[in-house]
Image (cartoon, rainbow, N blue to C red):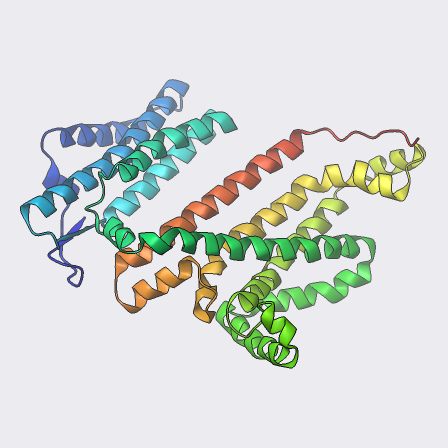
Length: 366
């Protein structure tokens, strides 16, 4: 952690070893135990002990940071700031990797993974809700913006949702067309590849002038929210960026459908529509969802950049923090983006797993 007398001073670093007293020694023992477990053979008992130790350490380090921040404020001044140091963020990252590696070695199912995640995150969430971490500087930044903070998150989700909606509406038919007609793919993929090479800020700038001209030429579009700045260019740019993984995923999914399935369906008398919806779509769905997953995670991250053109969202907090050299304000915008990305990733992995387990049914044409 870093302790400073106020928001404008970087402060002094406080190491974990400087706080080794009382119950904190328990965390030190757990840390040594986790290091020893990493040298143990990969047996199930040792792997589950690794999961337990990493989970307790992740929660304990967060509680230690919150309690020390409270002590600093009580002993110093109400304007003192205790920021989470890079060592703590790195420790959380490494503990997360340890948990992921151990669960993979255990071949844990979805429910087991969700249970471990809940065990690690729920105590930290309760610590935040109960006010036990209010003296941390990142929570003070949240308190200063609590009235608008959830609206900012909702705006970020709105940008991502709209971009994903338009991406699916355009990308899925394009993917089908590239599978059905090879010349469409030869014409489409070079354009989509070029879009991927354009930096996001440059693409926003390229879209501002045409959209502003459309809004000026047709006032109805301006009243509908189309303009050179704001939501429209942000959503349009994210849609263009997200098209390539969705189109490629759709093409790959449809291309990997075995020809034997197609021939069997045709032999059963399936119409082209029945062949597509009852045979090709169920078999292609896991691969298609993989492309949508990549596009969704990409959109969650890139949506932060749309704040530069007035679209709002969590990027507005990030850039405000950067411009004012307030690291905790930057983190206040970054952390929800990371959490949203992880949630989107987990959701699509669950959907991909369920779609892969589902057995497509081929019903006889009536």
